Image (cartoon, rainbow, N blue to C red; front, side, top):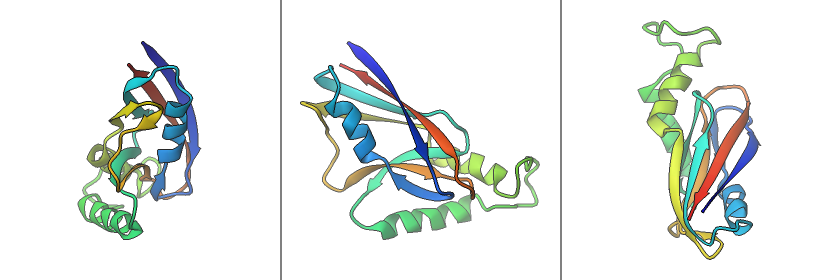
Length: 137
């Protein structure tokens, strides 16, 4: 059995936005009792990650690392059609990935105690992002 849902998330620009509750609500309201939730973001300049939800400094430090690994405006980049952050955002999307798989049972996500699901916006400006949640059970 499977069901699929789409979520629209508006970001405020570069950084992480916890979306655990939005995904949990889909699972809570599902007709599927147990299985896996596949979460997919339909864009190439943002990403998804499961990381610590107890200390915001973790996400700050992850952003610091992403700035080191994929800096804005690197003169070696050829792709800059939408600005200095364009190619860096695509590279960061590869680092975070665009999909996650999380098990669920009895109407709840089976995340660990300190785990949260985050949408990482890699562009400096906010965007409207589409997320597809597919529940397989």
